[in-house]
Length: 113
Image (cartoon, rainbow, N blue to C red; front, side, top):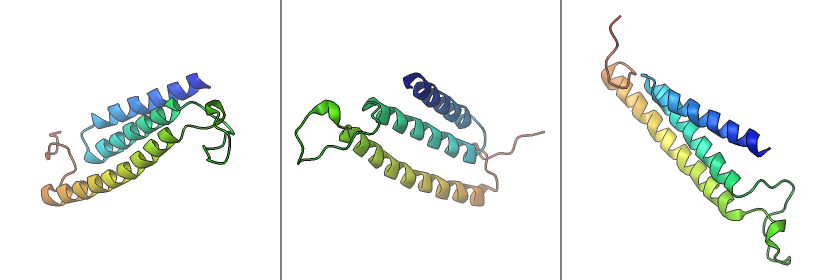
């Protein structure tokens, strides 16, 4: 299971890097989103793969191995919210740049064909 998750995170991160290197701004934004999702998955998995384990509660005896790690869950939830806000900002910048320059290329110029 760990190998499948590691391969999935690696493929997602590599796809994001490939998209960042593309000349269109929308592809760059999608690449940034893929990289942020890959990093979120990596952080979440670092808190251990736990299946059917309850979150930490105060009314139960504390035995660390029986509970899911709440710190990584909180970090990923915060990163998702911040990622959503920055992707909205990127899309507004993309639309503004396209309106001002008339193209969606990263350098602002259409390639000569």
